[in-house]
Image 1 (cartoon, rainbow, N blue to C red):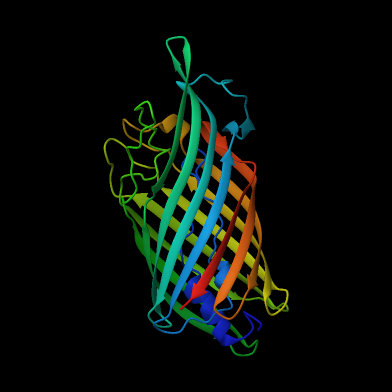
Image 2: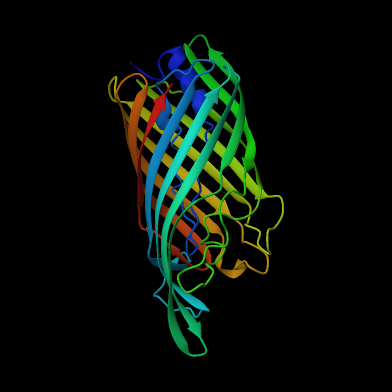
Length: 325
């Protein structure tokens, strides 16, 4: 099996490309890998009425404070609280339904397992605050419409399309610790807001043996605020390349960019939210059979610029599998 070489395999790639990845924030918490795991699904041709189920596990340990593009020491820049560490262990469960070659819809349900600690500076005292919780996060539902172009001379197909959907306020935003202290809104499993998501994508075969690529851009913005908090709008751009090593193994490489504006509202921390990020994400996928695939990615920051002082991760990783029914 040679994905991206035959017409059915490229159709599979284009139909599955629009499924959303979560974004990575560099605040005290609220982090997901920026890796676009649509790319691993290529090579399985969905039929009208087919369903694909995908599960991935992420690990992100944020323990490096940054200010701008510089690393800083804990407490080097005075704040009301000094962030120490946030460890994220996320499960993302996705389901994708293909109506036909033109239309499809997907939904993603995150489960957030998060540990966080910071020092609360209060009237000269330093108080250690910690949180440890596992909660369902904000569900995303995304529709897609796509088109196809064909280069008959080169015998290659390309696909492009649009994404449109919503992030729903399904996650809690009032989680407290054992002392009854409410976590900052950026640390909560949900934002409390309904967000609109719009974007587009392109995928095609490259004029190299067993090679293909894709590009995807997404914009997300909350319709309004919820209990004095509104997350900043975000823009993501992904570029991906895949080389089919053999009939079962694919090697992948992605560039993932994120621009996030400052949060706003009385419960927000605008001076310590938002930034610009660029990640390099190598990965591998292995087809167990024609309907089941496992995959893994590592992600490394190439550039990080944060507003104020925020925690960042030196690396993150994920593993997952997808099944077609």
